[in-house]
Image (cartoon, rainbow, N blue to C red; front, top):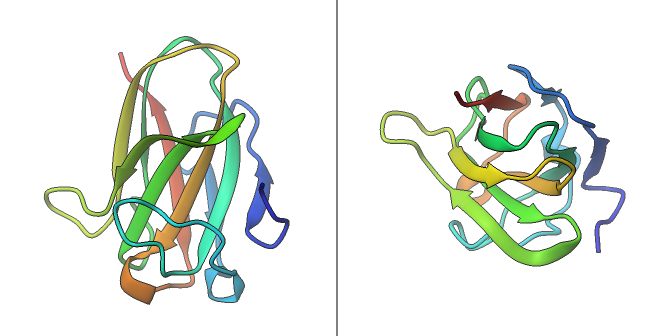
Length: 129
């Protein structure tokens, strides 16, 4: 179940860098337990719908804190599709999902690593060639 305090809204089918930014993660609750961080941090979540069948990359590049990101199936939130703490060169997160089908809705969860949070959480969504 997605609660209003951490659910920031439906991004529709937007593909952009940034697709969304949020400045108040410090006021969010800890609703989700993400598998690649232990789930002890404040988190925010968005719903996003796949606009076109294919491969997409989701990043938190541009956020000003150490992020963790998890993507779940919005219709079955226990189904984890990907989770990432750090990329190989930054403290931001990156998940690439291939074979996404047009019209499928995803729940994208962003939180800080080990209790961290900042005042600029950024989500980027890019379609891969």
